Length: 369
Image 1: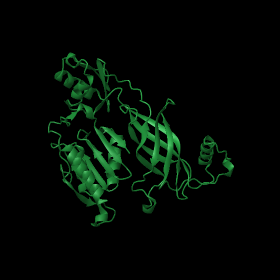
Image 2 (image 1 turned 120 degrees about the vertical axis):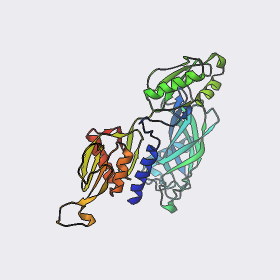
Image 3 (image 1 turned 120 degrees about the horizontal axis):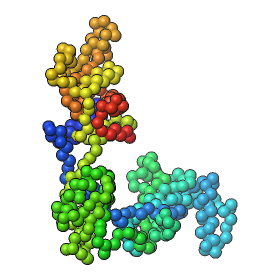
Image 4 (image 1 turned 180 degrees about the vertical axis):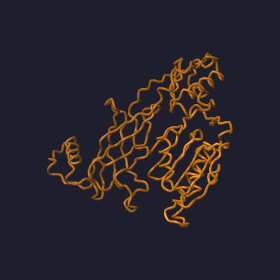
């Protein structure tokens, strides 16, 4: 619990260290290729239903008919007619084969595939995937997969998950995947990974400063269209390479991310809190106390401590003490520092942040994972 509390404190301190005293947000400078992609250059998902053979009695049981029917169909292709009712197999498993294939791959190139059981097989360890056609969402077949399955560290001896594995370079591209990107086009479209009007505007300014004026214009918060300059005519790839290396400072929304399962809280430096008072169990926190105000003697700006809770007259043990903190600033760093200083646990921090957001005093997005 203490280690989780320390994690929250360190993350908040690091993220807020770069905030200038004036409150202006200065983000990192990154390359365009790290925040945007070229429209038309994308991955494509392929899938297929296949058979894994060579299992050591860990394949699908009698209740799974998919592999039995698939074996009967395969034998029939080889001129052997066998009723599926007569087959009893434990060394075969029906599997789903999936792959993400970039549009840049060409016929004959290889890519990785993932194998996962669709029946009641206990393990795919030692199995071999028979040739499996892989098709796209349009029903066209673009690759074929085959090979020995690797479970990595998740083998049966370690008690890991043994019904999912991979085949590195297990699929061969059989047909080029269509792409809308053309090397002879005169207009390149950038698509931001995180749509934001400020980032789109800054990206446009950076491109126009580096190339011909008015080369780029932002169409919306996610799309920036860039005309290919005359000096790059016939060399669109070279222009994109230069374009992707340009530095730009993306804008980020004020956001607090909370993982309730692990107790982790990650806060952006631009998140601010309005003056608010919070009472949570034995914790009391006041944020945004004015320096010119005249608070009670025990509520001086920045003071952190504990007072008797009054449940038992004269009680002074730690269990009988209410913990309080008074904060003069409005940053989440000060709030988290204060909460950790008075012994608040990760769940306490999460609950308090949720309550502050519900009260409309947290200026930023609260994301619960």
